[in-house]
Length: 51
Image (tube, rainbow, N blue to C red; front, side, top):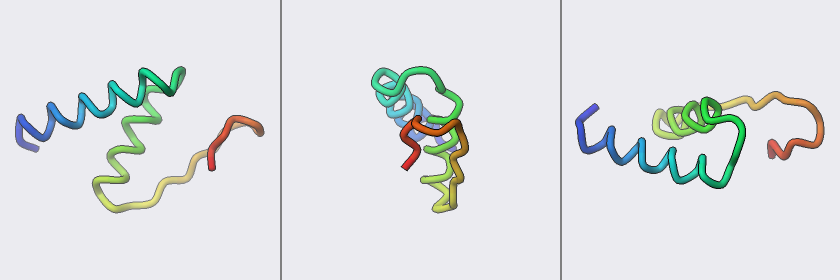
């Protein structure tokens, strides 16, 4: 990954983490899945807004 792409990805992750509090690793993995055009299965307790 180029330095520019890495910087842009980190900035995007930081911006999302400023709104979505509590699980920064989940946000980073979601971005990785999105960039890889893959699938992501979110599992957590009921009522945590995973849809």
